[in-house]
View 1: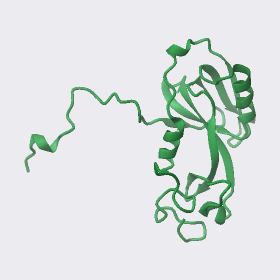
View 2: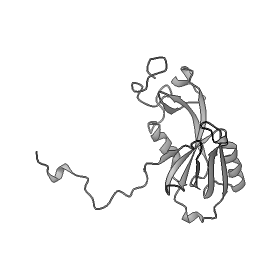
View 3: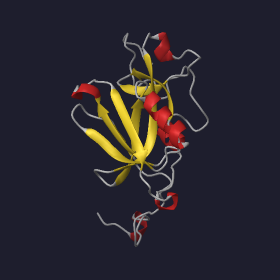
View 4: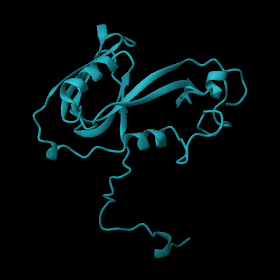
Amino acid sequence: MGFSPEDFPGFSHAPNRDRRDPHWEVLRCGAKEQLTGIVLSHNVIGCYLHFYGRRSVPCKHPAPCLACDDSSSRRWYGYLAVMDARKHDRAIVEVTDGCEPMVHSAFCKFRTLRGLKFVQKRRGEKPNGGLMMLFQDSRIPQEQIPHEPDLRRMLLRMWEVPEGGASAGGVFRDPQKFPRLDGGVA
């Protein structure tokens, strides 16, 4: 079986440098680790999520959604775009409702989170211990900090929310792929 050049339309002399839609890893702090880096976001962005159908899915709060109807609890999670100090790469850091007051305090003190050094770790080094975040001025000039991504758009894409908004019922994925807890489909 032969191939022709038309079978490979994607040849190029360099990789795609379009950084509008890169893959960003979501970092969650482990029990005995700490995350460190520089914040790229101006402020935290978050929403209520359900762990439903084996994944995190946004809730249509305050309107009820299918996960709410199945009595799935919901929790607020926030997200920050960061430059990860360990990997020297951009990433997204998850912020829980318990450490949001520390984030809010830093935002009020510095009037932005962008450019601040952060440390995130678990209290008591326990797997599900509460998160804490500390911030300090990095003294890095703003023009030397990588651009702030459209984090909201990235999160919606990660959760497979259609560009035009949420699907009916508040669960944003193909309901056939994500069974409900009672054996039905979401």
